[in-house]
Length: 141
Image (cartoon, rainbow, N blue to C red; front, side, top):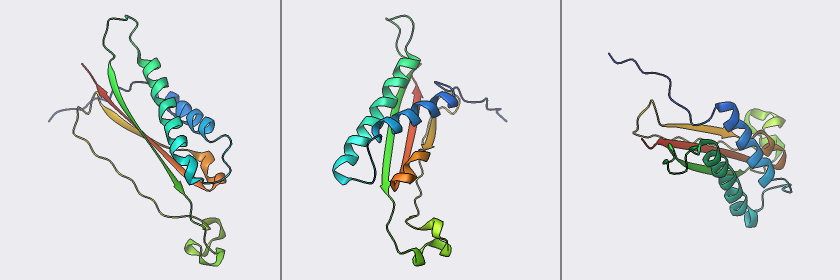
């Protein structure tokens, strides 16, 4: 039986969380509610901010050296539903405007070198949004 080691992360989880939080805060700083005309731009800003931070954090010190990872970043912004408080889930007023959401991903990769991390931006709810960011990395060598 093979023993798996802990996967190698491109940056610590604390740093990933900080970068994702900063990206969401920056993109949504003037957002008060869901705006279909702006959501594409918000997603682009979040994705580009995170990608730039990851590329910078993992850049090799020797310019001729190939970067150790490739990244994909996905950002999903969902408008929370507007419903009558009396129709709230489980009858709780705190569930007003909530919709169920489930997202899953799978991959075939080297579990020791490649990985995935998902983040739900806590500051989105006050704007009537749910923002979920996923980062995937693939070791190059």
